[in-house]
Image (tube, rainbow, N blue to C red; front, side):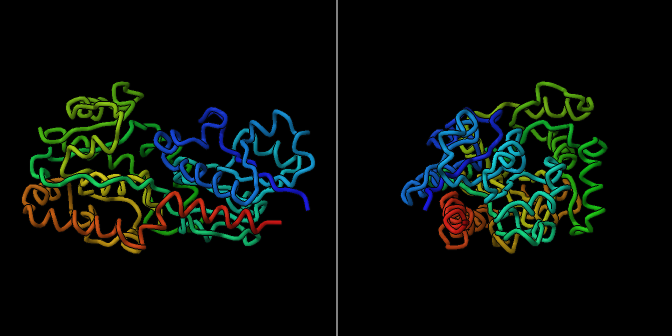
Length: 355
């Protein structure tokens, strides 16, 4: 029997070759830690894992191996790898549909090529029946939880988000996303949330207890003056350590890129890890995955003013109830599905199964 080799097809423009298998990559690239663990698991099974760049640099070195492809959506190398004969094993994505418009608009065709497709549960209905669908959860890196004894002395409210105005309402990307949802007859509660983030920044910038962090805010990038000036007023500071930054605040506006069933990213978990109470807006079915007493649901408020009053009037005991519930969730079996080790183990099981 020929030995297996797994070829990891991640956009080579994003990470240096081989870096994806390192401990450092886990710390600097959200979601990529699964491949650090996957590499270890496959090594134990006698299977070599290489990047697409390594494979394509010398395809003859692997001509006597059964080579299987793990693709992060579609990269500049995907078509070439398939044409050479690398067997499509796993297709996956951690990206939102308002960013990866082409991928999701062509999901049925693309997924038909692969033995397994790992995506957020909400996309199950749009994958091809020829592939085996597996629900994907965001792969978090668990960290030691902070001491909360000084929690009352933290800052009031923050938001950690990049300036991505090209995806706001009215942009080409947003229009393509809306078109996709309309013609796929998808869940009715999904929409782009970048504009909602801008509205939140505009409103809370007048509150001296609010601080904005993230990249891109010092460059206007066609952002209307109203929002750009509000971002500057709110501090608009790049982040070197997201958890350390969140750890300085009681509450964080935690708005996903879009609202879509089961699309729950690291944003809410980063708040839990930091002892910060998230004000969440995103997956409409979030309580199917995370208990409602772990976070403040933005949908329960009519506007930002109502939310602001609520946060200011929360008692210390009520706040600690949220924090305790979040910690209990992180210690429960329900959270294990949201760890990089769990996702890596499920990828490994699929790769061991393919023939």
